Length: 114
Image (cartoon, rainbow, N blue to C red; front, side, top):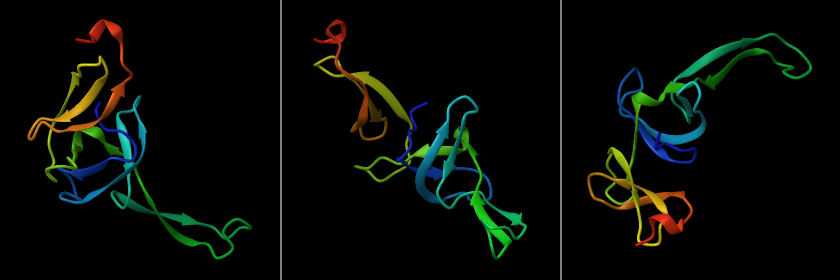
């Protein structure tokens, strides 16, 4: 999974299709991500000390990772990502459309250095 929290993603299917937003958190075990402003639902809350007014609270629900596509920062398009080793032996994510590096995945290792 090449999507991390803080990345910009585009929803590729579902009711919020076409929306671009930032990933707030990821649950790798369930394969889901909470995306800012996507998959909003209303939670009805009774009046209490924590919520003195009560009523309906709007919150984001997790979205399946297969329904999201990472947006490349250099070409500004949603694209698939890959992993490659650099000359110093560090592993990075890269955009398969333009080939630009997106971010580091692993620190440098001598075994993979050229």
